[in-house]
Image (cartoon, rainbow, N blue to C red):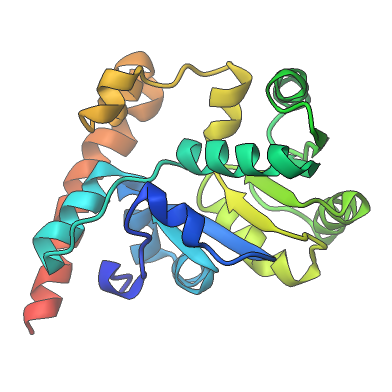
Length: 241
């Protein structure tokens, strides 16, 4: 069973500055990934055995307080992105975006050139398929290693991105941090609008996405939130026993 008490979650946005230097894999966990990890052992392993895990979800924040009395702050994937990109821009270096479509990656390169002029951006769009072949995996690893990036972003949706990064991290020639940030690719490219600040501050970003994309998001946020409460209750029972 995937349990929050085993995760060693980062406690706050300020904690990003305490992450160790050098090669480090950073994943995020929210209600959806918590649910998925209950039935996907490899995904659970990727989350638990990565370098760092951040709480990208109001539900996870509330569950940690209810289950273990631990007060933590939501640290969104976008917060991680902003922090790491600003830090790399200060000293200059190379950032690699692995995932998404060529159109989205082109928009990312265009915006990053304006926002982070001291960062050289390299990208690779893997084939859109449920399972990669060994040839696909090799092409992605080679593309990353050719750039030898100081910062790597992997955006292929959960749990695919976390499992891929975990399985291949030892092969990747990354000189700094690597983060699995999924939707942030679309947020930064502008192909999907992120919730305005008020929704974020009131832990309603999930509702904003549901209202904008009800057909695509209803199962994740309506059925998924009910399942999340059930799984948290299971963890509570497991803790008491």
